[in-house]
Image (cartoon, rainbow, N blue to C red; front, side, top):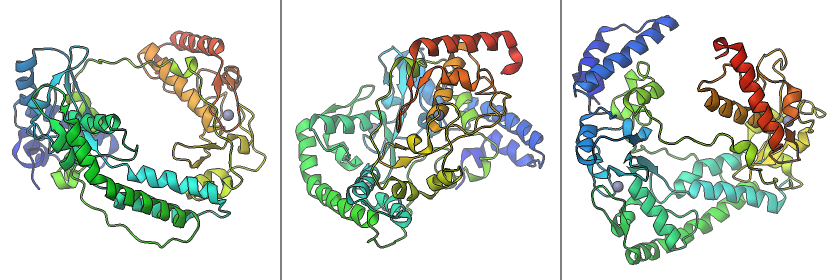
Length: 437
Ligand SMILES: [Zn+2]
Ligand SMILES: [Zn+2]
Protein backbone atom coordinates (compact mmCIF):
# COMPACT_ATOMS: atom_id res chain seq x y z
CA UNK A 1 0.00 0.00 0.00
CA UNK A 2 1.19 3.51 -0.77
CA UNK A 3 0.98 6.39 1.65
CA UNK A 4 1.99 10.02 1.67
CA UNK A 5 5.12 8.93 3.55
CA UNK A 6 6.27 6.70 0.71
CA UNK A 7 4.96 8.23 -2.50
CA UNK A 8 3.31 11.66 -2.70
CA UNK A 9 4.96 14.05 -0.27
CA UNK A 10 8.16 16.04 -0.68
CA UNK A 11 9.49 13.94 2.18
CA UNK A 12 8.85 10.77 0.13
CA UNK A 13 10.52 12.32 -2.94
CA UNK A 14 13.54 13.34 -0.87
CA UNK A 15 13.79 9.91 0.69
CA UNK A 16 13.78 8.15 -2.67
CA UNK A 17 16.86 10.16 -3.65
CA UNK A 18 18.84 9.10 -0.54
CA UNK A 19 20.79 5.86 -0.51
CA UNK A 20 20.65 4.12 2.87
CA UNK A 21 24.21 4.28 4.24
CA UNK A 22 25.97 1.16 5.52
CA UNK A 23 27.81 3.09 8.22
CA UNK A 24 26.04 3.44 11.59
CA UNK A 25 27.01 7.09 12.22
CA UNK A 26 25.83 8.09 8.77
CA UNK A 27 22.58 6.26 9.39
CA UNK A 28 22.07 8.27 12.58
CA UNK A 29 22.77 11.50 10.73
CA UNK A 30 20.41 10.55 7.93
CA UNK A 31 17.67 9.68 10.43
CA UNK A 32 18.02 13.13 11.97
CA UNK A 33 17.83 14.68 8.55
CA UNK A 34 14.81 12.49 7.68
CA UNK A 35 12.94 13.81 10.68
CA UNK A 36 13.64 17.40 9.63
CA UNK A 37 12.52 16.67 6.05
CA UNK A 38 9.40 15.01 7.40
CA UNK A 39 8.55 18.04 9.54
CA UNK A 40 8.91 20.37 6.56
CA UNK A 41 6.60 18.19 4.49
CA UNK A 42 4.22 17.77 7.42
CA UNK A 43 3.95 21.53 8.00
CA UNK A 44 3.16 22.04 4.31
CA UNK A 45 0.16 19.76 4.85
CA UNK A 46 1.44 17.05 2.53
CA UNK A 47 1.28 14.36 5.17
CA UNK A 48 -2.03 13.39 6.71
CA UNK A 49 -1.22 9.81 7.69
CA UNK A 50 0.34 11.24 10.86
CA UNK A 51 -0.89 13.88 13.27
CA UNK A 52 0.58 16.37 15.76
CA UNK A 53 0.21 19.80 17.32
CA UNK A 54 0.86 21.51 13.98
CA UNK A 55 -1.45 19.44 11.79
CA UNK A 56 -4.44 20.80 9.87
CA UNK A 57 -6.64 18.75 12.19
CA UNK A 58 -5.00 20.32 15.25
CA UNK A 59 -5.55 23.78 13.75
CA UNK A 60 -9.25 22.99 13.27
CA UNK A 61 -9.33 21.86 16.89
CA UNK A 62 -7.63 25.05 18.16
CA UNK A 63 -10.27 27.02 16.23
CA UNK A 64 -12.93 25.40 18.38
CA UNK A 65 -11.30 25.30 21.82
CA UNK A 66 -8.87 28.21 21.54
CA UNK A 67 -5.07 28.14 21.82
CA UNK A 68 -4.26 26.06 24.91
CA UNK A 69 -2.04 23.14 25.80
CA UNK A 70 -2.94 20.07 23.72
CA UNK A 71 -2.49 16.77 25.50
CA UNK A 72 -2.30 14.04 22.86
CA UNK A 73 -1.13 10.45 23.25
CA UNK A 74 1.02 8.46 20.88
CA UNK A 75 -1.85 6.68 19.11
CA UNK A 76 -3.28 10.11 18.29
CA UNK A 77 0.01 11.39 16.92
CA UNK A 78 0.88 8.26 14.97
CA UNK A 79 -2.51 7.76 13.28
CA UNK A 80 -4.06 9.59 10.33
CA UNK A 81 -5.66 13.02 10.69
CA UNK A 82 -8.83 11.84 8.93
CA UNK A 83 -9.29 8.79 11.17
CA UNK A 84 -12.76 8.30 12.62
CA UNK A 85 -13.64 6.19 15.63
CA UNK A 86 -15.18 2.90 14.43
CA UNK A 87 -17.31 2.82 17.59
CA UNK A 88 -18.89 6.28 17.93
CA UNK A 89 -18.20 7.41 14.37
CA UNK A 90 -16.70 10.75 15.49
CA UNK A 91 -13.79 12.40 13.68
CA UNK A 92 -10.68 13.51 15.59
CA UNK A 93 -12.05 17.07 15.59
CA UNK A 94 -15.32 15.90 17.16
CA UNK A 95 -13.47 13.69 19.67
CA UNK A 96 -11.29 16.60 20.91
CA UNK A 97 -12.52 18.07 24.17
CA UNK A 98 -11.31 19.99 27.20
CA UNK A 99 -9.75 18.16 30.16
CA UNK A 100 -9.85 18.95 33.88
CA UNK A 101 -6.81 21.26 33.64
CA UNK A 102 -8.25 23.33 30.82
CA UNK A 103 -6.10 21.46 28.30
CA UNK A 104 -7.33 20.01 25.01
CA UNK A 105 -7.49 16.22 25.12
CA UNK A 106 -6.78 14.03 22.09
CA UNK A 107 -6.52 10.40 23.12
CA UNK A 108 -7.06 7.12 21.32
CA UNK A 109 -6.92 3.70 22.92
CA UNK A 110 -6.60 0.11 21.84
CA UNK A 111 -9.70 -1.67 23.01
CA UNK A 112 -9.06 -5.28 23.88
CA UNK A 113 -10.68 -8.26 25.40
CA UNK A 114 -9.25 -9.52 28.73
CA UNK A 115 -9.74 -13.23 28.20
CA UNK A 116 -5.97 -13.73 27.75
CA UNK A 117 -5.42 -12.49 31.33
CA UNK A 118 -8.28 -14.63 32.61
CA UNK A 119 -6.81 -17.82 31.24
CA UNK A 120 -3.25 -17.07 32.43
CA UNK A 121 -4.51 -16.37 35.94
CA UNK A 122 -6.55 -19.54 35.87
CA UNK A 123 -3.56 -21.60 34.67
CA UNK A 124 -1.41 -20.44 37.61
CA UNK A 125 -4.24 -20.88 40.11
CA UNK A 126 -4.95 -24.45 38.96
CA UNK A 127 -1.22 -25.26 38.82
CA UNK A 128 -0.93 -24.38 42.51
CA UNK A 129 -4.26 -25.92 43.56
CA UNK A 130 -3.54 -29.26 41.86
CA UNK A 131 0.05 -29.35 43.11
CA UNK A 132 1.45 -30.18 39.64
CA UNK A 133 4.94 -31.64 40.18
CA UNK A 134 6.55 -30.99 36.76
CA UNK A 135 7.00 -27.87 34.64
CA UNK A 136 4.29 -27.50 31.97
CA UNK A 137 6.10 -25.60 29.23
CA UNK A 138 3.80 -26.68 26.39
CA UNK A 139 0.79 -26.13 28.59
CA UNK A 140 1.89 -22.58 29.39
CA UNK A 141 2.51 -21.91 25.69
CA UNK A 142 -0.90 -23.28 24.84
CA UNK A 143 -2.43 -20.87 27.33
CA UNK A 144 -0.49 -17.99 25.78
CA UNK A 145 -1.68 -18.88 22.30
CA UNK A 146 -5.22 -19.66 23.12
CA UNK A 147 -6.04 -16.56 25.16
CA UNK A 148 -6.69 -14.70 21.93
CA UNK A 149 -8.98 -17.42 20.61
CA UNK A 150 -11.29 -16.86 23.57
CA UNK A 151 -11.56 -13.14 22.88
CA UNK A 152 -15.03 -11.93 21.97
CA UNK A 153 -13.50 -9.29 19.71
CA UNK A 154 -10.25 -8.32 18.01
CA UNK A 155 -8.06 -5.51 19.29
CA UNK A 156 -9.19 -2.28 17.69
CA UNK A 157 -8.29 1.41 17.88
CA UNK A 158 -11.12 3.52 19.37
CA UNK A 159 -11.39 6.91 21.05
CA UNK A 160 -10.81 7.14 24.79
CA UNK A 161 -14.42 8.21 25.43
CA UNK A 162 -15.66 4.94 23.91
CA UNK A 163 -13.16 2.93 25.94
CA UNK A 164 -14.16 4.80 29.12
CA UNK A 165 -17.83 4.15 28.36
CA UNK A 166 -17.07 0.40 28.31
CA UNK A 167 -15.27 0.62 31.68
CA UNK A 168 -17.98 2.79 33.25
CA UNK A 169 -20.88 0.64 32.07
CA UNK A 170 -19.09 -2.51 33.31
CA UNK A 171 -18.45 -0.89 36.69
CA UNK A 172 -21.96 0.53 37.12
CA UNK A 173 -23.51 -2.83 36.26
CA UNK A 174 -21.03 -4.71 38.47
CA UNK A 175 -19.86 -6.94 35.60
CA UNK A 176 -17.03 -9.50 36.00
CA UNK A 177 -13.52 -8.03 35.73
CA UNK A 178 -12.54 -10.00 32.63
CA UNK A 179 -15.57 -8.94 30.61
CA UNK A 180 -15.42 -6.10 28.09
CA UNK A 181 -18.05 -5.05 25.54
CA UNK A 182 -17.19 -5.37 21.85
CA UNK A 183 -17.41 -2.20 19.76
CA UNK A 184 -20.75 -3.14 18.23
CA UNK A 185 -22.28 -3.42 21.69
CA UNK A 186 -20.68 -0.25 23.11
CA UNK A 187 -22.22 1.63 20.19
CA UNK A 188 -25.67 0.60 21.38
CA UNK A 189 -25.44 2.22 24.81
CA UNK A 190 -23.43 5.42 24.23
CA UNK A 191 -24.94 8.79 23.40
CA UNK A 192 -22.10 10.47 21.50
CA UNK A 193 -21.93 14.23 21.02
CA UNK A 194 -18.96 16.30 19.82
CA UNK A 195 -16.39 17.56 22.38
CA UNK A 196 -17.78 15.71 25.42
CA UNK A 197 -17.44 12.31 27.04
CA UNK A 198 -20.26 9.90 26.17
CA UNK A 199 -23.31 9.72 28.36
CA UNK A 200 -24.45 6.14 28.87
CA UNK A 201 -27.89 4.62 28.46
CA UNK A 202 -27.55 2.19 31.36
CA UNK A 203 -30.69 0.19 30.46
CA UNK A 204 -29.32 -0.38 26.96
CA UNK A 205 -26.00 -1.45 28.52
CA UNK A 206 -27.86 -3.88 30.78
CA UNK A 207 -29.61 -5.38 27.74
CA UNK A 208 -26.30 -5.66 25.87
CA UNK A 209 -24.77 -7.49 28.86
CA UNK A 210 -27.74 -9.87 29.13
CA UNK A 211 -27.26 -10.76 25.48
CA UNK A 212 -23.54 -11.29 25.94
CA UNK A 213 -23.74 -13.16 29.25
CA UNK A 214 -24.46 -16.73 28.05
CA UNK A 215 -21.47 -16.64 25.69
CA UNK A 216 -19.31 -15.06 28.43
CA UNK A 217 -20.25 -17.77 30.93
CA UNK A 218 -19.48 -20.43 28.34
CA UNK A 219 -16.08 -18.91 27.61
CA UNK A 220 -15.22 -18.73 31.31
CA UNK A 221 -16.25 -22.37 31.75
CA UNK A 222 -14.09 -23.41 28.78
CA UNK A 223 -11.20 -21.33 30.07
CA UNK A 224 -11.48 -23.16 33.38
CA UNK A 225 -11.25 -26.51 31.58
CA UNK A 226 -8.41 -25.49 29.27
CA UNK A 227 -6.48 -24.15 32.25
CA UNK A 228 -6.86 -27.47 34.08
CA UNK A 229 -5.72 -29.37 30.98
CA UNK A 230 -2.75 -27.04 30.46
CA UNK A 231 -1.65 -27.01 34.09
CA UNK A 232 -1.90 -30.78 34.57
CA UNK A 233 -0.39 -32.03 31.31
CA UNK A 234 -3.65 -33.32 29.80
CA UNK A 235 -3.86 -30.72 27.04
CA UNK A 236 -3.66 -30.88 23.29
CA UNK A 237 -1.27 -28.68 21.36
CA UNK A 238 -2.63 -26.47 18.67
CA UNK A 239 -1.10 -23.57 16.78
CA UNK A 240 -3.29 -20.49 16.74
CA UNK A 241 -3.79 -18.55 13.57
CA UNK A 242 -2.81 -14.93 13.83
CA UNK A 243 -5.31 -12.47 12.50
CA UNK A 244 -4.70 -9.05 11.04
CA UNK A 245 -4.68 -6.33 13.70
CA UNK A 246 -6.90 -3.43 12.72
CA UNK A 247 -4.87 -0.83 14.60
CA UNK A 248 -3.97 1.77 12.01
CA UNK A 249 -1.11 3.31 13.96
CA UNK A 250 2.47 3.90 12.82
CA UNK A 251 4.55 1.39 14.76
CA UNK A 252 1.74 -1.17 14.98
CA UNK A 253 0.59 -2.03 11.51
CA UNK A 254 3.51 -0.77 9.43
CA UNK A 255 3.21 -3.33 6.64
CA UNK A 256 -0.54 -2.84 6.30
CA UNK A 257 -0.22 0.93 6.31
CA UNK A 258 2.60 0.98 3.77
CA UNK A 259 5.12 2.24 6.33
CA UNK A 260 7.26 -0.92 6.33
CA UNK A 261 10.08 0.44 4.21
CA UNK A 262 10.50 3.68 6.11
CA UNK A 263 10.75 2.44 9.70
CA UNK A 264 14.55 2.54 9.42
CA UNK A 265 14.25 6.20 8.58
CA UNK A 266 11.91 7.46 11.24
CA UNK A 267 12.34 6.43 14.84
CA UNK A 268 9.03 6.13 16.65
CA UNK A 269 9.98 8.04 19.78
CA UNK A 270 11.66 10.90 17.91
CA UNK A 271 8.71 11.17 15.57
CA UNK A 272 6.24 11.38 18.42
CA UNK A 273 8.36 13.99 20.22
CA UNK A 274 8.82 16.11 17.11
CA UNK A 275 5.15 16.12 16.16
CA UNK A 276 3.56 16.22 19.60
CA UNK A 277 3.15 18.89 22.27
CA UNK A 278 6.30 20.25 23.88
CA UNK A 279 4.91 21.09 27.32
CA UNK A 280 4.30 18.45 29.99
CA UNK A 281 0.89 18.56 31.65
CA UNK A 282 1.35 15.92 34.32
CA UNK A 283 4.37 15.77 36.59
CA UNK A 284 4.40 12.26 38.07
CA UNK A 285 5.32 11.86 41.74
CA UNK A 286 8.69 10.11 41.49
CA UNK A 287 9.19 9.99 45.28
CA UNK A 288 6.38 7.49 45.78
CA UNK A 289 8.76 4.49 45.84
CA UNK A 290 10.12 5.66 49.20
CA UNK A 291 7.04 7.24 50.77
CA UNK A 292 4.56 4.39 50.22
CA UNK A 293 5.25 0.88 51.43
CA UNK A 294 4.64 -2.19 49.29
CA UNK A 295 2.39 -5.00 50.52
CA UNK A 296 4.12 -8.25 51.50
CA UNK A 297 4.01 -10.98 48.83
CA UNK A 298 2.15 -14.25 49.26
CA UNK A 299 4.01 -17.33 50.56
CA UNK A 300 5.09 -19.80 47.87
CA UNK A 301 3.34 -23.12 47.17
CA UNK A 302 5.24 -26.42 47.52
CA UNK A 303 5.51 -26.86 43.75
CA UNK A 304 6.93 -23.37 43.15
CA UNK A 305 9.89 -24.65 41.15
CA UNK A 306 7.76 -26.56 38.64
CA UNK A 307 5.59 -23.47 38.10
CA UNK A 308 8.72 -21.34 37.65
CA UNK A 309 10.17 -23.85 35.18
CA UNK A 310 6.97 -23.69 33.11
CA UNK A 311 8.41 -20.46 31.72
CA UNK A 312 11.78 -21.52 30.19
CA UNK A 313 13.28 -18.00 30.25
CA UNK A 314 12.59 -17.85 33.98
CA UNK A 315 14.25 -21.26 34.42
CA UNK A 316 17.32 -19.85 32.64
CA UNK A 317 17.61 -17.04 35.20
CA UNK A 318 17.24 -19.59 38.00
CA UNK A 319 19.84 -22.04 36.63
CA UNK A 320 22.39 -19.34 35.82
CA UNK A 321 23.38 -18.97 39.48
CA UNK A 322 24.54 -21.56 42.05
CA UNK A 323 22.17 -22.88 44.68
CA UNK A 324 23.85 -20.96 47.55
CA UNK A 325 24.01 -17.60 45.75
CA UNK A 326 22.68 -14.63 47.74
CA UNK A 327 21.94 -11.11 46.56
CA UNK A 328 25.06 -9.09 47.48
CA UNK A 329 22.91 -6.11 48.51
CA UNK A 330 19.99 -7.52 50.49
CA UNK A 331 21.62 -10.88 51.41
CA UNK A 332 18.50 -12.85 50.51
CA UNK A 333 18.90 -16.44 49.28
CA UNK A 334 17.64 -17.48 45.84
CA UNK A 335 14.60 -19.01 47.48
CA UNK A 336 13.79 -15.82 49.42
CA UNK A 337 14.01 -13.78 46.21
CA UNK A 338 11.23 -15.74 44.47
CA UNK A 339 7.88 -13.99 44.31
CA UNK A 340 4.46 -14.15 42.72
CA UNK A 341 4.01 -11.97 39.63
CA UNK A 342 0.78 -10.17 38.68
CA UNK A 343 -0.69 -13.16 36.91
CA UNK A 344 0.12 -15.67 39.65
CA UNK A 345 3.36 -16.80 37.94
CA UNK A 346 6.60 -17.29 39.89
CA UNK A 347 9.22 -14.64 39.18
CA UNK A 348 13.01 -14.79 39.55
CA UNK A 349 15.42 -12.39 37.87
CA UNK A 350 18.92 -11.22 38.69
CA UNK A 351 19.81 -8.24 36.50
CA UNK A 352 23.45 -7.16 36.36
CA UNK A 353 24.63 -3.87 37.85
CA UNK A 354 26.72 -1.53 35.69
CA UNK A 355 30.52 -1.69 35.51
CA UNK A 356 30.87 1.27 37.86
CA UNK A 357 33.90 0.56 40.10
CA UNK A 358 31.83 -0.05 43.20
CA UNK A 359 29.52 -2.50 41.41
CA UNK A 360 31.65 -4.33 38.82
CA UNK A 361 28.67 -5.84 36.99
CA UNK A 362 27.60 -7.97 39.95
CA UNK A 363 24.22 -9.59 39.70
CA UNK A 364 21.63 -8.37 42.18
CA UNK A 365 18.09 -9.47 42.92
CA UNK A 366 15.16 -8.01 41.01
CA UNK A 367 13.80 -6.17 44.04
CA UNK A 368 17.13 -4.42 44.70
CA UNK A 369 17.28 -3.58 41.00
CA UNK A 370 13.84 -2.05 41.06
CA UNK A 371 14.87 0.18 44.01
CA UNK A 372 17.84 1.39 41.93
CA UNK A 373 15.55 2.17 38.99
CA UNK A 374 13.10 4.11 41.18
CA UNK A 375 16.00 6.04 42.68
CA UNK A 376 17.25 6.87 39.18
CA UNK A 377 13.82 8.06 38.02
CA UNK A 378 13.53 10.40 40.99
CA UNK A 379 17.07 11.72 40.46
CA UNK A 380 16.28 12.26 36.78
CA UNK A 381 13.21 14.29 37.66
CA UNK A 382 15.13 16.34 40.26
CA UNK A 383 18.11 17.03 37.96
CA UNK A 384 16.15 17.40 34.72
CA UNK A 385 18.56 14.94 33.06
CA UNK A 386 19.17 11.22 33.18
CA UNK A 387 22.42 10.04 34.82
CA UNK A 388 24.32 7.96 32.26
CA UNK A 389 25.02 5.25 34.85
CA UNK A 390 22.18 4.01 37.08
CA UNK A 391 24.69 2.63 39.62
CA UNK A 392 27.57 5.07 39.33
CA UNK A 393 26.80 7.42 42.17
CA UNK A 394 26.21 5.26 45.25
CA UNK A 395 27.64 2.03 46.65
CA UNK A 396 26.06 -1.36 47.38
CA UNK A 397 26.32 -0.56 51.11
CA UNK A 398 24.56 2.77 50.66
CA UNK A 399 21.75 0.98 48.83
CA UNK A 400 21.63 -1.66 51.55
CA UNK A 401 21.23 1.13 54.12
CA UNK A 402 17.85 2.24 52.77
CA UNK A 403 16.10 -1.13 52.42
CA UNK A 404 14.52 -3.62 54.76
CA UNK A 405 14.39 -6.96 52.92
CA UNK A 406 11.58 -9.49 53.28
CA UNK A 407 11.19 -12.91 51.66
CA UNK A 408 9.10 -13.14 48.45
CA UNK A 409 8.26 -9.40 48.54
CA UNK A 410 9.37 -5.98 47.38
CA UNK A 411 11.74 -4.32 49.82
CA UNK A 412 10.42 -1.97 52.45
CA UNK A 413 12.14 1.40 52.13
CA UNK A 414 13.45 3.33 55.13
CA UNK A 415 11.97 6.75 54.41
CA UNK A 416 14.50 8.97 56.20
CA UNK A 417 17.55 7.11 54.93
CA UNK A 418 16.16 6.97 51.39
CA UNK A 419 15.43 10.71 51.30
CA UNK A 420 18.98 11.36 52.54
CA UNK A 421 20.46 9.09 49.84
CA UNK A 422 18.48 10.90 47.12
CA UNK A 423 19.88 14.22 48.38
CA UNK A 424 23.38 12.80 48.55
CA UNK A 425 23.29 11.44 44.99
CA UNK A 426 21.90 14.74 43.69
CA UNK A 427 24.76 16.53 45.46
CA UNK A 428 27.39 14.18 44.02
CA UNK A 429 26.01 14.56 40.51
CA UNK A 430 25.96 18.34 40.84
CA UNK A 431 29.59 18.33 42.05
CA UNK A 432 30.77 16.02 39.30
CA UNK A 433 29.21 18.37 36.79
CA UNK A 434 27.86 17.97 33.33
CA UNK A 435 29.98 15.09 32.11
CA UNK A 436 28.11 12.43 34.07
CA UNK A 437 24.91 12.89 32.08
ZN1 LIG B 1 -15.38 6.69 19.88
ZN1 LIG C 1 18.68 -7.93 46.72
